[in-house]
Image 1 (tube, rainbow, N blue to C red):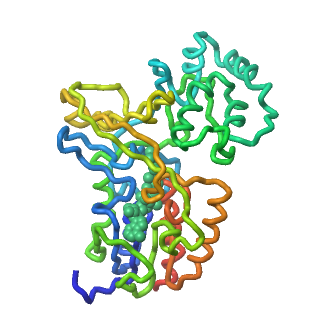
Image 2 (image 1 turned 90 degrees about the horizontal axis):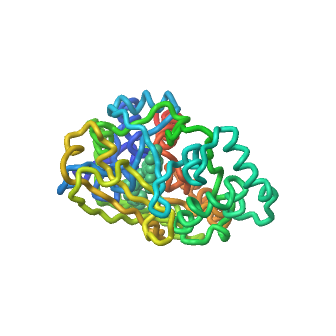
Image 3 (image 1 turned 30 degrees about the horizontal axis):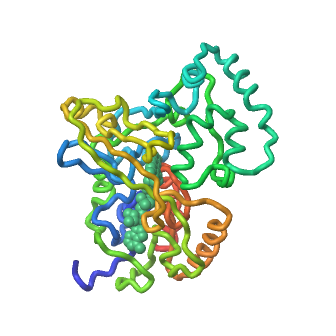
Length: 380
Ligand SMILES: Cc1cc2nc3c(=O)[nH]c(=O)nc-3n(C[C@H](O)[C@H](O)[C@H](O)COP(=O)(O)OP(=O)(O)OC[C@H]3O[C@@H](n4cnc5c(N)ncnc54)[C@H](O)[C@@H]3O)c2cc1C
């Protein structure tokens, strides 16, 4: 890149938030965009690549299922990829037996060895939960038990949550937990509310290549941004990284849970029959096992006699942020960072890291499209 290159807009981070804004700013506003990315690839946490040993595509930062009920987002993203017809299903292995998730009529009947109708199952669970409805302690455990009862909680939620957050659920605030979906039907479609779903036929990386295919978009990998960054854009910097590191941790570190992954090649055509199985029991250190070939049943390696299996471990690592620890202390810290960042001139921020939030991909795309509408007037 020439030393004299001065972009109109500098975008920090090449995940969905940064890439969608780059695409809009270059294609619609005809602006020169420079994306800088600290990693050696574009795509942020949605990035996928092909495993060299097995030729199977996997999602480097955990299995990503695209699902949305937002027509605008669906129409937009379909300009950059085609999706296969994958429908997500989640299973959970407790004491060597596999159950359906979220908890549904099949899970209840199979777990309690019953043959309930929907109404009978509802009454049965109500009977188990009613004495816990007015729970005293405002913690995760009491809230969960009040919704699904002790037995299902102990089997499927307790150990999984402890591994995921590194703390016993009775010491977790109830605020990090919303609602455990429990279905009194046999519907096991994980994302039943979102009519659009699938995996990009050519993988996620391909979406990012297509989003940034414009001669006015340049990308610089392995480049970390800070406020003294050498390139100053004509109009605006759009920052999609964490705010605490940007502002030198002046209000302290924001805490995150992180993940680590262990890949293994298994000499079998099909290891577990599905893309993801949860492991809630504490005897297993990992939380989930992924088998990515199931995300692409339409592809050739699906029938090969080997498969890629990835174990997922939940770890504490604020430097590789995955899930925000959304408690009161961190929320207050983040509010201070947001206020401070909003005072920086010619500077906008957004995306999951800067907002210290969990966003699905469709929410991220929708937020980026809205951000574009706000800033396009300012940069004419
Ligand atoms: C384990 C896991 C599973 C998920 N599964 C799903 C799913 O199934 N379906 C779904 O819809 N969503 C899923 N998501 C959410 C999805 O990953 C996010 O919606 C998406 O990644 C958000 O995009 P983003 O651009 O905001 O952030 P990111 O994708 O994190 O991109 C931010 C980029 O900024 C870069 N960056 C940060 N700081 C700097 C700096 N100082 N200088 C240069 N570059 C910097 C980072 O390296 C990164 O590439 C999942 C998330 C996780 C954690």
